[in-house]
Length: 375
Image (cartoon, rainbow, N blue to C red; front, side, top):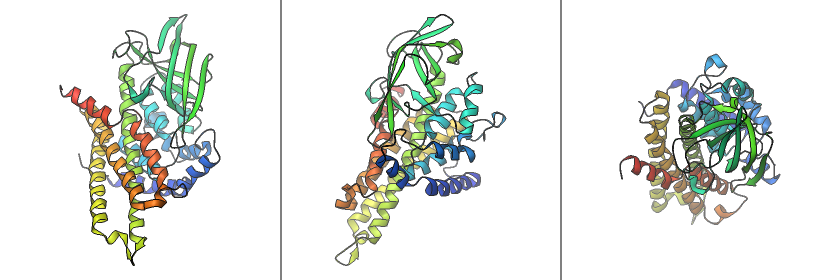
């Protein structure tokens, strides 16, 4: 598999780069933050994504989508990251679509996603650090299920039209089996939603399921066999977050390289100093290695390879480490101005922190790889 984009993917990159740079640059995020926008993103912009076909990037052509793959989705996500554009693209057009693919629920939810009318959120985590424990219970009730428990850190869960919920219908705690995935509308009775502003100005929600009744049609796939669609969802989400991290790290690096060229001390550009050149070269190398890891994960996902799971963890860990290096070096090489709110580089650090943490940080995935290798 080549570690570069083909001509069609490069053309998509050019299109999405121009679109996002014009419609949702960093100033768009700053304006939402300053207005304390309750949604944390623009529904109008989401509709524009739909008008250009991007919301259907992973939906098959017979269902009205573009029928593309994770490489193309990553191209879009990298530009979202580069501009820090608040968008439900990752949770909705990537992760939720992957979970719903091939299920009876796709007929209900895909048209809204394609039209830009539907936003999806992923109700997976119940504790910090993405611990692999699902204890929210779903017990048989009438012709459906009654859900009781809580979910935490559900990004855009406060405004989502669709909640993809992982619940336990058998076993306990960290058991891999006994999981069922549900597609639940946000207006479900006895569902409480508490928004919480995150460090990067996005909004997540804590969800309380206080006896939420759903019918059997809400099940994605089969009862007690939700691990397969959940794993598909997580692979897509982690790979997408890795691509967005590349954009964040690349955007911060571009700003910093420009600053090193124009900022002068003692009559010469600070980028001429060898110590800063060494750090910039190291940063570039780390970002390129991470880029190769992310592209490999995307390609293996598109190929349906049984090695994709391992590659996804490598990509998530490496993109998190490289982008953390990028934003840290960027703030430091900017000096005092890098610590001020008036300068954009701080926004990159905050977004990088959120993306590196979500769905497993570098330590989580390093541990996951070690366990898979028998350690």
